[in-house]
Length: 274
Image (cartoon, rainbow, N blue to C red; front, side):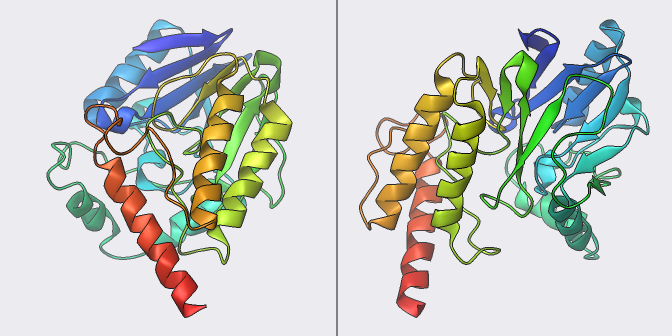
């Protein structure tokens, strides 16, 4: 079900790790951001768009992880955009002969491993390097590209609706998930990304993370503060005091502690090899 979070901006929340799809109404149709996840949920999303009388006229993938590269034939053949680096990374991943099988194997045990459509996965057109907005006939959507989390990751700032679509940053349930493979300074890059979002949209009326709850006024600022504290603690070699993992973690999200532990160990190994 689509929920309107601002004038002409809607969110569809999937069951799988509280994944959020964003729909922005334009003059002649809708911009569809990170649609997901299962076949039934994509069908529900298509039905909701039909009920609103909205044809998909453009898509956007915030980054090249499989759950942000999905599509359904019912959305039509509108152009699907991403940053130049996002699209290149997606092409590189999907050029591997067993790419889809590896995703399914990764999902083993989640209950959705046989229910994620792969046939239109990752068909993303890269915008010109340094592109500053999504090309479509609707509210201006600024592209805030940075080096945190994944190659070519971008948040989207819908300025005249005061909505920040944060990609996989600013979650209330996930700690910052670092890009430990594609950058020489994952902690510094993450802090730079937070500074970019803070400068552009700290006073947003709503923030939509890739996974987690939609936040209202003041949420961008408070989530940036929480994410910054986590990253700075890791950089200082301290254990972060963060309610998103450990005894205060939300029920069903206990596994975030494993994500944190793995990142901490990976950073320790990087420091040891430096």
